[in-house]
Figure 1 (cartoon, rainbow, N blue to C red):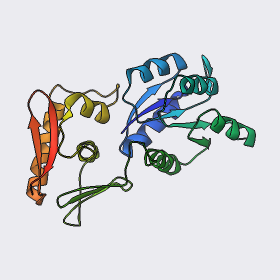
Figure 2 (tube, helix red, strand yellow; figure 1 turned 60 degrees about the horizontal axis):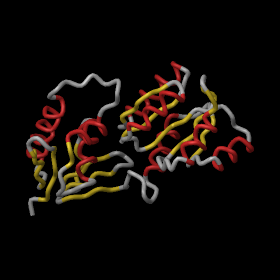
Figure 3 (cartoon, rainbow, N blue to C red; figure 1 turned 90 degrees about the vertical axis):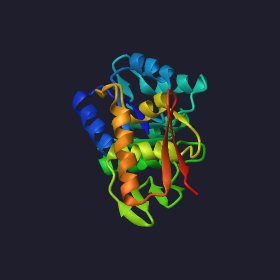
Figure 4 (tube, rainbow, N blue to C red; figure 1 turned 90 degrees about the horizontal axis):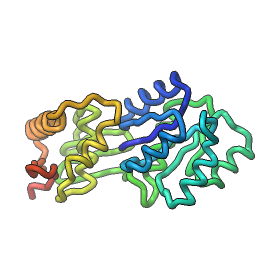
Length: 224
């Protein structure tokens, strides 16, 4: 899942990127509204985390403008403005959730996941195919009901593919979900990741196939 983080304080932004990254999200950071607009116009984000006090404008006005333009991406406001009127104003402006600073990273991660589990959003709770099950809340991965250890990127790749079982997911869509703008990604990084995951699934007895559709992308199918 890919997040856009709009926050102008460098240390906090780095802390958020690491914490959310450790939770399995690909995070793109911007420090002002101009870059936020450009990022959103490029598409591909599952949720936005928005500070309000930004160097080139107020995040609340920005949110109102985006909603007026029809932008439906879930937005969580993360700000030091913690009064009741601030919270009500943020929600009325179109925010889906509101969290005041200071905050616990565990709560922020839980709130983002809750946003993405809402009807019409990007994240379901459990994804199953054949004898495998991915619990996106944990996250945890099971084969024949037994826990299996996958890396963060392997889990993210499985989630992307399991959301469209039996359908080809394009290489570009997968890379958007796995990597942020700042990630240094080799030309064959995705191939290496797929190969490693395929080998691991085969060794552990998963009864699914991870197919490569040359020149297009990848797909998972139940062997049955």
